[in-house]
Length: 192
Image (tube, rainbow, N blue to C red; front, side, top):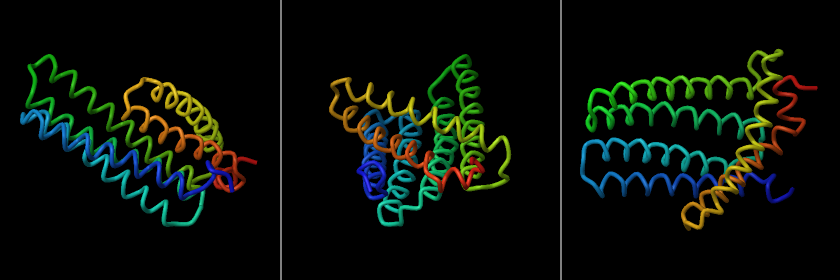
């Protein structure tokens, strides 16, 4: 089993990502003491907790690629939805009418994206294998490659936190790419 194909390594990367989000949310909420920063901070804390707990589960569990990838996508979907709600609260407490309208649009879009993540998670897990499953599989490959490249670019920024986060996400995206190419995930999604 290679470094990138190991649930303990991807679990550790998710734990690091979760901890950074959690700490960033706490700092954001505590630093400015405004209603909006507290709401945004709570969204980041929730995301951090969800990813941290999922990382612990992955690190301590089996290397079931289908369960790990579908669970990861589902966790990101749930985090996206919950963060969107707290971002809406933050925008409501911080802004004028123009910014509020834009924030509401962004929240609705984030909730839709979160729901798409949850739907994709079910497709990865093997729900209703059909042509759409195969399209989702191709999109999973593309997103994994682009995410890995984007993570490395983000890590080059020079900021120590960005470097750590970028490298951790790189491990996650490469794991997802390797898993998507595995017989287990391909079989679960009806790709032959």
